[in-house]
Image 1 (cartoon, rainbow, N blue to C red):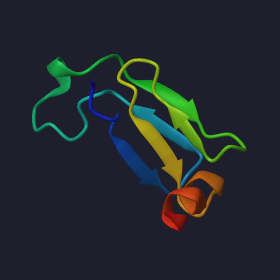
Image 2 (image 1 turned 180 degrees about the vertical axis):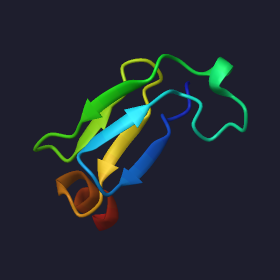
Image 3 (image 1 turned 60 degrees about the horizontal axis):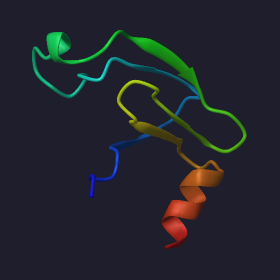
Amino acid sequence: MQPAPETSRVATTRVACDGATDIPGGTALGHPRVYLEIDEKGYVDCGYCDRRFILIGGPADEAASAH
């Protein structure tokens, strides 16, 4: 079984992902930088690394905090 993808709570609907933001000096370990737009669901998943970006206060954030 694979581990769940990493999630990040963000305050804006437009986010950038390079797959290595949290790795010091890790840009060579990531993927090309992509810009993603969070829609009415309140989240967006990166097509390269599956990282999920959840809009703080959005529908997906409320669902996550309800559990």
